[in-house]
Length: 243
View 1: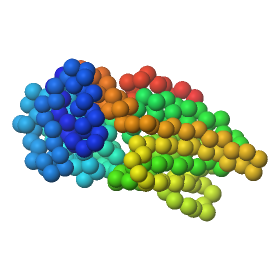
View 2: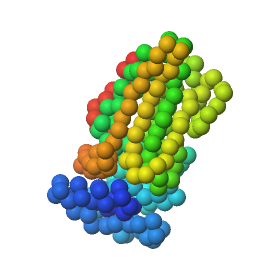
View 3: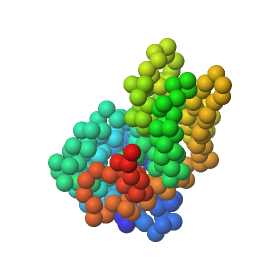
View 4: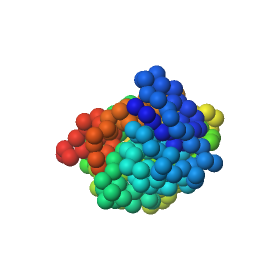
């Protein structure tokens, strides 16, 4: 495949290494400074674009790809207020858009475990659910997209909770997310249910960025010939319609 890397930071460089190892060609790379100059013509001959840029650039870069009818695999977080608009644009223009808040296979299995645990804990009101996420000091958004996905999956299953909040709140209907930024931590996410008697906790700890990068490349390999909006559940075959 001929791949365009939209965003060439730490994740972009990791994706490049894995893509080359898997016999793909990286024929275009953009940085934050060059993103605004990207044109549909520059994408000619590209099989797929992998977008890990910045919250301020993601929307424009994806729309440019749609103008060129280039399938997009997107992993940037912090711009999700515009995600529904991008999905609508994809469907209206007959394009292909693959989005995930986290491309790690392990994290997506963790999402499924989290959802199942939340469903189980719904009837035990003595347990208070909460989230903690730790990332490197340079991560721009808080909470992380992964933490938001975890929280929203919990909200879908725990009827007494109506929203999530980053930080501390006395409101009983919210799930609190505690965001920590320190060192070079690739990503740690903890889901905890606390009671006076005991605690239940599940944790995912990433040791490096390779899992995220591999998942993004696998998504780029998966989308050829497909039209519409997709995510990791589609690629991995997880059935989110089951009770």
